[in-house]
Image 1 (spheres, helix red, strand yellow):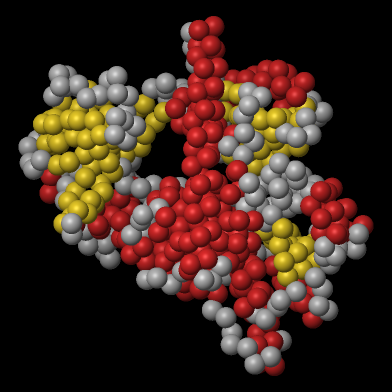
Image 2 (cartoon, rainbow, N blue to C red):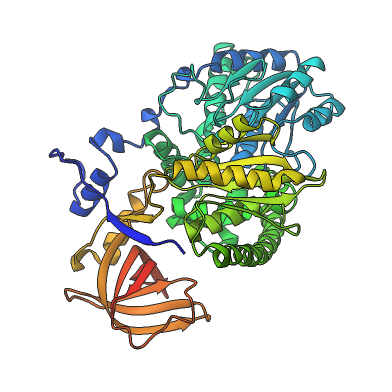
Amino acid sequence: MSEIVIKRRELPQQNIHLASVKHPLLEKLYLGRGIKSAEELNYSTQALLNYQHLSGIHLATEVLYQGVINNKKILIVGDFDTDGATSTALIITALKKFGITNVTYIIPDRFEDGYGLSTSVVNKAIEQQAELIITVDNGISAVEAVSFAKQANIQVIITDHHLAPDVLPNADAIINPNLVDCAFPSKNLAGVGVTFYFMLAFRALLRQQNWFQTRNLKEYNLANLLDLVALGTVADVVKLDQNNRILVQQGLSRIRSGYCGAGIKALISISKKNIHELTAQDLSFYLAPRLNAAGRMENMSLGVELLLVENEQDALELVEVLEDLNNSRKAVEKNMQQEALSFIEQLDLQTDTIPNGFVIYHPKFHQGVIGVLSSRIKERFYRPTISFALAENGYLKGSGRSISGIHLRDILERINIRDSKLIVCFGGHAMAAGLTIEQENLALFTQYFNEEVAKVTANMTLEHVVETDGEIGDEFLNVATAQLLKEHGPWGEGFPDPLFDGIFSVYQQKLIAQKHLKLVLQPNDGGQLVNAIMFNVDPALWPDPSIKTVKMVYNLTVDEFRGNQSITLLVKHLWALD
């Protein structure tokens, strides 16, 4: 286990006052997250960045328009995660609402096709007689696949948000805010955000061409699709800069008012969440994992169909299948974690120290769950982790997760420079990456990975730093404050959920369901008793009647029981002080 160090979030040196924020705690939270003016808290759609700043977007809309008026068969190529599924559902829905019906989609099979647009997927496009491919949430590295498509006289529009390679595909148009020459002010759009902007620009072009008038069509309001944008953006853990916060907040507002698709309503229902109280954290921890289960265990087409379905009963039937897949994923993940921890334990016995990074492989690992496994190991040991599974073609497919200060894709790039034949292909960004290697090269890759991570971490202390908003007074430990914080998000990556620390006296402690610790506490400086809960504690350590004082890091949450609301502290980290 890595050491956890509490660091309290620093407030700006200069005297900044957010006059429009009336609550002192809320103002402190905003200032600690870098907000400098009330304008940065403007979450109206009018404050969204203009699509015209995205390089390539006008060319992309023209290519699509020419394809439409020539009745070309359009094939959307998505990705097998929530961002890819929401992107696919969004563009399919938008085009059909625009009256464009000669469009279908394909989600690459994780096990047969690999990630994104590949030659295998292009072959399927050829079989389907596609004439225009549009990628969503993928494609920026698909140099070979795009070349193959062009040879087959298929046009290609790429919409993506991942970091671009040095050599770009020879597509007919590319939209990606992370292109070197793209002037779009936010580089943090998720794939679904890029897709949304593409459809905004395309609708504008259709409007210029009197498309809706000449066909007696009502112009479709793309704000109806912001529920998908919110889900995909949060699920992909992109930074919630102001533009992304607008997209997420607008989507959440629509969901809370019931203006969302039948599929999202079904996901909320199966998750047993209150639709009117839904938060960004609910999207991340309850809805996205269930949708992702389709892509991990079978094919994300099931998830896309759920997001496209309009009948609520059909949606409820589809979501039951996803729930079964998610339960299967949990069982597989549990077994994989046990194998991984056993492997790490052997490393500890050999070295007496935790390595700077982990490369983990077992022949029984499930290819669809290795990303989750890497994330769990990374969280537990605070080390960059890559987990491999055996693919059907005999290669090893890897999925990695990293920690602050270690750019995972850059690490892979450095390995590739050392030996260009070691990694078959790779891609990703700072915190997550995927790759393929030959099975016989696992040991050499592990050696190079450890060496490159060691170079980066030479001057780093690999401590798990937990940044908090400090202590709060007893006057804020109430339902009103918890509701206030819930309503004034969205909180997430780069704009973290309010997290507090403090010392409490323990009045009661007991175990629930043999793994969850329920506590009754009192702030160290006195005040009211308050309930707290910590999930998945070590039952060998808790409860412990001898412990009378604890230090905690926690969130504020609201519990509802028989119509009554009460405050509960959701404990993230817990230390005994006596």
